[in-house]
Length: 181
Image 1 (tube, rainbow, N blue to C red):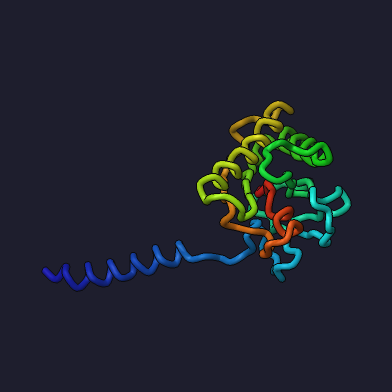
Image 2 (spheres, helix red, strand yellow; image 1 turned 135 degrees about the vertical axis):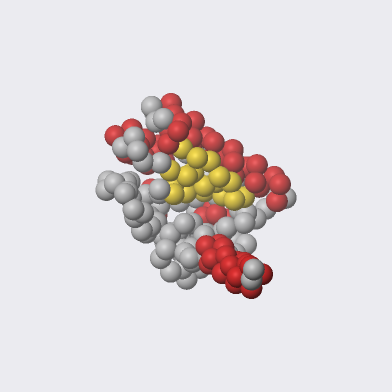
């Protein structure tokens, strides 16, 4: 019986299939598929406020729809936080409410809440802070009536900055939670 040559070919083919399935499809670090020039990839217009952005500067992520995804997803998919804080700023409450309304009216929709931080602090601290930020968004949505089964929390800490740089402006754009539908 000549099983050995067939087994070798099968093992090689299986390895290639596994590697192809694990390869990256690209995209930006905020989850969008749009190209990024590094200076404003989160749709920001580069304000100089040390406390963050105004609602006119929030921008939106240009994310492609996945199969079976409903129309009507709120346009603004990123909210920003103050330095070393996990409390939702009042200027983002309308954004949060829009996401809550969308999720309540689309019970089959789900979202991953991606928590991010700026690069200051240890890696461990930033992972925990990113998780606290995403958890505060999750709590807000569940209080608004969204089913917890529609929500998933992930923290990337400082590992996926929206912009590179060491200015307060760059840091402010990296302290965020991204809604990834």
